[in-house]
Amino acid sequence: MNHMGRRQFFKITGGTLAGSSMALLGIAPEPAQAAVRQYKLAKMKETRSTCPYCSVACGILIYTLGDGAKNAEPSVMHIEGDHDHPVNRGTLCPKGAGLVDFIHSPNRLKQPEYRAPGSDRWEPISWQDAFERIARLMKEDRDENFVRRTEDGKLVNRWITTGMLAASASSNEVGYITHKVIRSLGILPFDNQARV
Ligand code: SF4
Figure 1 (cartoon, rainbow, N blue to C red):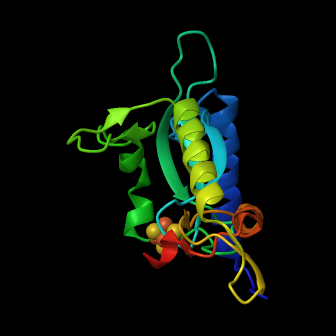
Figure 2: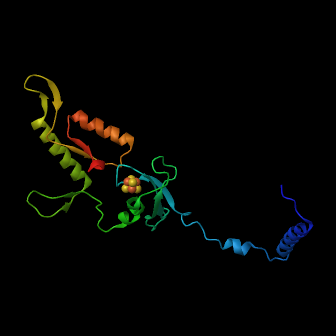
Figure 3: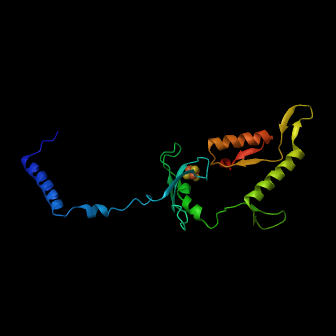
């Protein structure tokens, strides 16, 4: 424990007295405190998500400006690593750290596109049209090529003329469901974007 000398004691009590006397005279330090900068993300909406780039699947926090009021366009202003996420504990590699630019890039695809056979151009189509087209082509191919038994009678239930490429940023639950759906259709060629 420190021992306070007589001289130190008068220094401290004198300083405290001077401070409280200034406050009594109306010269309080409030204006200086009020000038402290506001936390820049205080008024933004926080959304938890996953970095879409690679199989590490780091947790991210997305900060959006715009409170849903009329004429207020929500816009992503800032993205940072999620400190509570068990994978990355708040860290991000340079790719993940640049996510906000990816979101606002004019080259970012926001809807499906279709290139007709022989065409040199991609045409935007609706999600509904894309899903219907994928479902129809899958059904046609499966009806034509599904193998229930091999020539020597072995039961295999396999369909190897269509493959599936899954996204690396899927959660465990999405990955589990994707695997179940694909295998239940009999598809064997199944890989993940994380390996590409
Ligand atoms: S921040 Fe980097 S390491 Fe993490 S998921 Fe994104 S690309 Fe992968």
